[in-house]
Image (cartoon, rainbow, N blue to C red; front, side, top):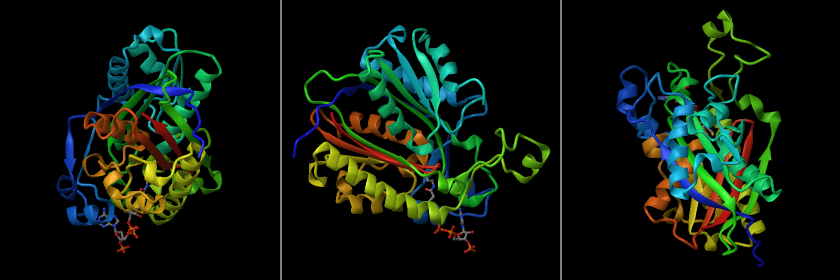
Length: 331
Ligand code: COA
């Protein structure tokens, strides 16, 4: 199979996690749940929860600084700053502009991207397009998610699943050595928007006393249906991305799936034909950090040398929208 020539590559990565660890046992003190239920249904053991005075911009800026350091990039060199977040600090202006100000990235165009858990793969694909069009030399893609601020802490079927964190990557034009993004396959289906939604707080149902009373400004999810679509769509996205990259499942050195749930991860790997010993998993430590799960996993895998120069890496994600996508990269 002919392999495509990458146009851009990831030049550095970083992650930022709040220090505060909340275990399943901690949750069971105030919620009718148990470590056994959460672990057997999701694989999650604990998650990080940011303090009240730490927002999405703090999580994203922390990760971005590390990614810039690892890429050897100065703030003034960043041409485009894309921030994937489902939990912007404010509805106006964008969290990207707040992160830009903190970084001192004064030459960048900065904007938020709303694609929920698929946001990092969407962001990398946008960065690829922006740089390839010749609009700049350096892109910074940041995922910043304070999921604890949008879940209902009295709803045991959702709040136990999520956690907070930030991840980031610097993207540059490919150096010609064959490393970089090989393929990207993105999809969405707005007909399924009600499966995972925050109904109030936006223009249609602005914040109101009724919204607060009914908690319609917080995440609502039809868990079983989301599960079903996640497995089917992520498997299909893996197939498309591999085919477009000219790779087979055997060529994949590491699959990094969105970390929502261990059972979804196992089903996706099985459908994709990739053994679990080639799948990166950290959901037990962090829960679902929406778009931040993938860049955090990449950064950890690099540190553990599970990704080394020449590795074929497959990313796959799924989230509210619905949105989903997969990306093949050569490191
Ligand atoms: N602790 C104890 N019991 C719980 C619970 C919890 N934290 N959450 C739900 N339950 C109960 C339910 O109330 C229900 O009780 P009932 O039978 O008495 O009504 C029972 O467990 C089964 O609930 P159900 O929702 O059918 O469980 P499930 O097996 O589908 O598992 C999820 C629930 C959320 C773990 C599962 O559907 C899932 O992982 N979905 C995907 C969610 C996801 O990843 N979303 C993000 C995508 S980016």
